[in-house]
Amino acid sequence: MPEINELLPEDIVAIKELHQTWSPAIVEKDFETLMTLFTDDAIVMPPNGPKVQGREAVLDWMKALPPITSANLTVEEIDGYGNLAFVRGAYFMTITPEGAPGPIQDRGKFIEIRRKQADGSWLMARDIFNSDMPVS
Image (cartoon, rainbow, N blue to C red; front, side):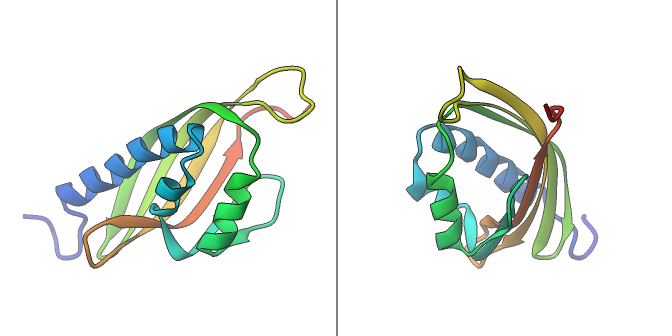
């Protein structure tokens, strides 16, 4: 039996399932699905830009992203207690910024803080990610 407040196996499964939803949704620009993954007060801290605060601001930020033709997340660690969990992992994506001569492949890492909701879902409250690619 897990210690009091330790994440249960079903919590870890639920969090991993959300990551399987994110990749196809970002490629398909399925913003309705993407917004179901965030808390109302979510904060995203992208590289090379200011924090993005609130679900509506996150939606606007995502809509402004250059086309993403592939996105893969690898979850490397999930831990937490009670109604909070953190997720650490890596990403790989292909993007095509406007004016670029062609697609750009990016890889990097991320950390998320997730909050368990009354319905048992684990929504993203905080997200920070950055590239492993050298700055040119």
